[in-house]
Length: 216
Image (cartoon, rainbow, N blue to C red; front, side):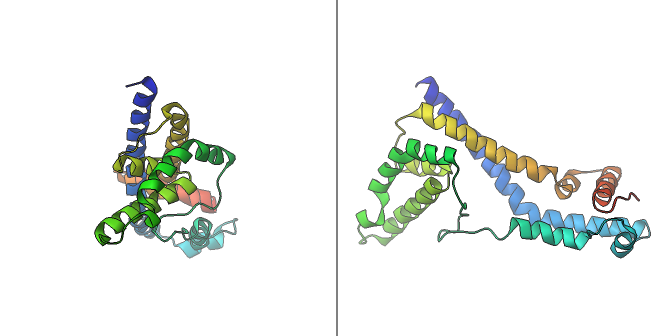
């Protein structure tokens, strides 16, 4: 095994770990928001005030509800393709360059599981391979190289250039880490992770100050 292949396997393991962490966080976002809302309301009640009172006495024009709505609108509903996977709007120049690196791997996948190349006599096998084709195509067109690689592995296809792929996999690892870091920096997630009441109250007070320039 070459050094580049060893690094390649290490990067895939890192991607698997971070993607699973990101997926777990994103699956928990709804519950995290609810927990924050509940604690926030209880905190205000304990302090003898309300959202309305904060908004009425705040020098800022923003409100808690407006901020929440704006955050949701900014995120927007995720656009998905027919497989249910999120579609990116456009690819960067780096992603376009990476497509050239992964082109051979993707073409080898197409040769094995494109629906036009499959018999429909065994529909279970046809659907399984067609699902793989759709996943690989989505990954190839949306710069999710780990998905292309995963499908290739399932089909027994090996990459031809580990060194070039490693650079793009490192960038994908960094992108996933950046998303995780963003989620963990939010007031909601910080409150979700906090254990002591003193720490939770501090986080909510920081949230109030960021919105209304007041601390309770």
